[in-house]
Image (cartoon, rainbow, N blue to C red; front, top):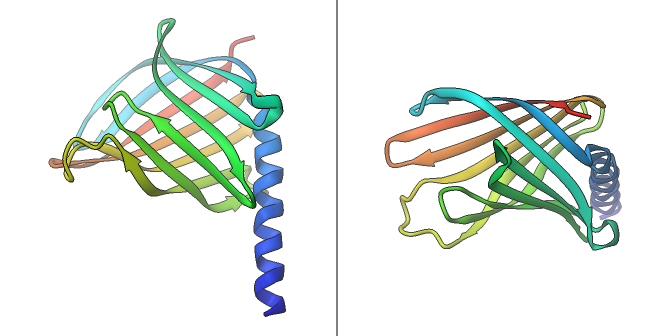
Length: 161
């Protein structure tokens, strides 16, 4: 029983620490996007991060030019780090941190549930990994599933200013 309580406290502490680190993302970013798997394409992508709710949420807008095409909202839910992704596929997957590696400065989110899924096999994000390489470089990977199969959207960002 004590081991379980200690593990839960450590996980909550890691989630809080990582979320606090994510606050340093605030600002504008530029970079590239590349799809691998069933879908393949590449191009440019920007991002804008801002903190809201008196520090309780971090909003990530992924941009095509200046136009937001996807938005994710990261927040803590008691001891869990969570994200709701407002997808270009017009649905909203909700994910929860499954693994936080503070040494690598990386978090891996797994699918919890989804709203506005048109049908059970409709395309949607079912996983997300975010890695802060250093204060000016960020990698994001969205695992995306569709009836045709799985694809991964790799986004590489550099701080723009």
